[in-house]
Image (cartoon, rainbow, N blue to C red; front, side, top):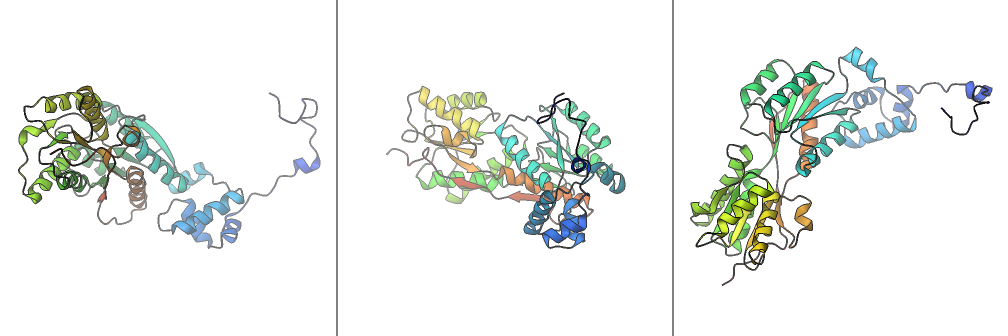
Length: 358
């Protein structure tokens, strides 16, 4: 194999200067360069959460500048930690999960930890097998996105002493299971209140998969907005779907075929909202002149469709970061107040909503 900048004849003929090995940087030198104590450097390098963000950044910058390298294997042997965290998720390519993964991976990187990625494909047995491998392998803990396991299975995993945090739980969890989610009910309520304020009274809901926590919470928000406005929601306008574009198109067709169709549709995710736009266009309906549409997620496609989609923004990357923060506290055996954390959603109004005609 060629060595850049040297011929094969002189590779072994190094000068005395090249033989001289630079002494390895010590933790004391990193502390001096960052202007902090050795104990603070140690806390940062070991992923401890009790360090101010600015201080952590200064230490990591000093460590890079000083070419300080930690020995992960030695640290694992001495502290029982590997610096590896398992992340299970149904699929990698979906933007929803990719944004959560991005936030989690960035937060782990800041603590000199790495992701062991484990796609589950929404298959329960596959996820159980992956979790068993993660738990008995080299990972310190795990972040579980939309896990297939039941509440009882998660509690059993907890009793085995394996630290984990759930992101976007599929079902309601026991109080002792750490979880991070978005405020689904308040986001849905804001979406419907927006449509009501424009004058819409026949507002349809394309719901998600029955039994999923996000589906039931968003439906609760839909109904509570109607109740607060003194408007009776027509049950015919609530149609089940499955969060997919195909399911959204079928549900939208069912709604638009009604003798008295809705003037607005609130879809429980952006995939289905885009499907409503497509079905409306297929029928010659104009959005928002003939039909207003609101989605949920505020994904990238909400900003590239025509018209641009009004949608409820979820702080997906922040959900990933918060999950890592909780996991680090669990790994340090710290007391965690409020294990079930809801991050605020926000309605982003764009071009797909307007007052109904007449």
